[in-house]
Image (cartoon, rainbow, N blue to C red; front, side, top):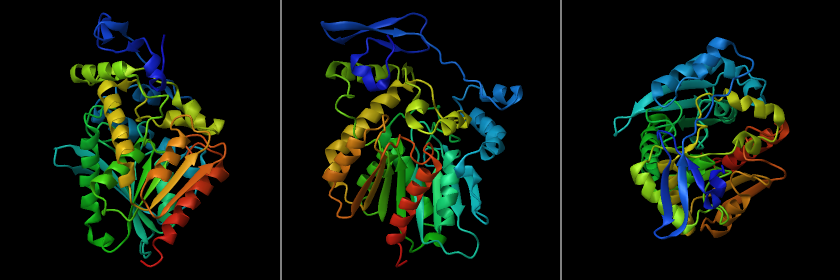
Length: 385
């Protein structure tokens, strides 16, 4: 029986690579059925529309950053030529810069900026926190250009283990540690002379919503506002694993934290409402789309539980945007955040029939509606700057 992370509380077989023989554990001492760990391997999906050479490059093992950087370099121009509204918009004069920031842990963290055209003073600065199955170098390229053309400096980074940054692909050894890395990197950028006196905002999408909220909770006065898009800020009650399974997961994570334990559904079907755009998701060649690593899963559960316990401490101005038909992160959870946060300036917008990727996977008019809602909210809080 193979189930996704969203139904792990009912799973009786969990898949873990790196083992020659199945291993059996018990949910709790002396009770419940045995749980078997079974060897499986995820096949690489062939990318239609590109030649054999690019497909061979895309099939590389992406566990290490150098391989991911090679793949991204090979596909960079191909991605920008996709027939997607985010890539077809003409925004002349937008200035971009890419670099690797060496952080205090000795890791190279990929960082990128998008600035308004020369001669336009930014109205504010927006800092992006990407989702679990994403990077800052694919669809966000178009999103960032749109926001920069609206008069904002935009900054983004790949977390360690994701995209072009150092680290084992898809592995989060500590969610709080991840938040610290994001805070450190963005604090350096905020200290730059060109941003002096400008309002600073966080934008968090999906898992990046949890990163953004926890960053705000650690530094309540560091941001002038937080935008959350389909945030992963609380695990729905019908998704939370049973107590015995959660204990087993936690114990196993201390022994096999990097093991790719959880089989996952094809999230593209759940994330993209527009079928034509759904087919383009395969071009996000360096995103992590394999089974969830055990340590990562446990850290995400811990992070969302922490946010749920501290939700009343969320005081920043909030804009929460969510597709009403999202099956990846529950819109009811966004309502929970909106209703229980202590923010005096908060807005929530649920988009009818919208799936998870409301910035990338909806019909064109909906994507521009969401982008315009974001820019309007930012404009209303930067008019005096």
